[in-house]
Image (tube, rainbow, N blue to C red):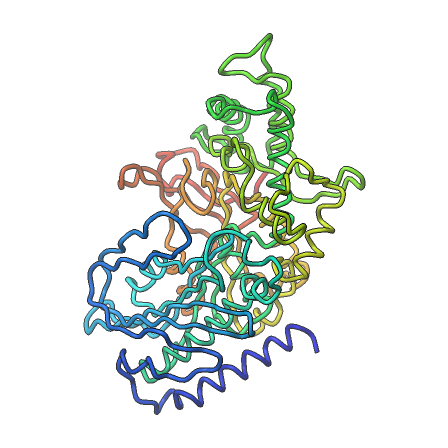
Length: 518
């Protein structure tokens, strides 16, 4: 039996068990919020069920030593359910399910929207729960089975690694549907996943392993090649910390950015401070080489070499095979995330705790000719969501919306393009054409922010697609400054890009059409 067939069988079994527990959806009586404390679900213990008045909710401290929890405001009244799920003896997965109880708007819309995590997770994503709840959704989130945004939890704990890698989200989904069915008297008529980064990887993992869990999956900047992406983060760290001369001070980022725009911006027919298709422009930072010595707006020879490494894919120095794609021209203002004074902690954690189990491990010792093999052996097929066969998900009507900012400073944008193309090849272009769409976002950094239009109503797009059959081809996104929209621009279904039509404001989406990239 394939793992897909096994996953579908397991999902069906769990859904049937939950169905029996709470009763047939058409006949079950709705429960009170507090009575959910005694609800019986497989491998799940309800630890809290309380009614929360609308208004402000302050999440509990996560105990992970992070920043204080911020209050979430303007919430409708809801039933807050917390539970512990233990699919293995070493599991301790915490989940929360929030259920709208308002008599008026928004009330429950009959659907589930689950939300994901970032990096190594380790905390319930409360702000995302609040955002989903505010639009009428029942919503669910998990800490993926541990506390704290680090990989220390995984050392010597393969079951906890499995929970983080894929199992916690699935267990949360099954439990959430059972809780929803018990509370409202019927389960959700549709279920959506909405998240970015690690949450994007979680969404892809759901589509690949448990294709019946969600009807629509929104996956932004998915780190689906998780181990390779973390190796690449150390590739950049080694380049800028080869020696003191190789480090590029952040004060020089604006000069590199201006040079990249000067080379690449106008290629789409308009000079607007955005690079519409960075992959089509080859920018060499050697153009900024200092004529002599050093200066704030130029790069020394060692800094030129470091910048060229950032713009180039990570490769195995022995086989010359690509490990992971590169950052793109336009991303320079945010290089500090990976090229700053310290290496990315999440990448160091992979080797410190999963590969070598050595607290003193030094990132400078990593050899890139063996790094992939070492990481793959350690993650055991648990962290990487690389399977491009989405036929089971697509065949049952599932929709996958991928998006990625071209200025992403933490996850190489071309990685998502590569996955999308593999999905088309593996699943079949005709079959996937109406079920999988990718939208690249010029000027947007990791998941949000940046100089380009970086906001669009992702859930509304998915609702129109799943519920009304409107396959997205052009989406209008916006950019705001101080809360005021100052630019709109169409996002075009890949491989098309937005092209200026020659008339009208360059800050108005109506002035652009979607065309094949030149």
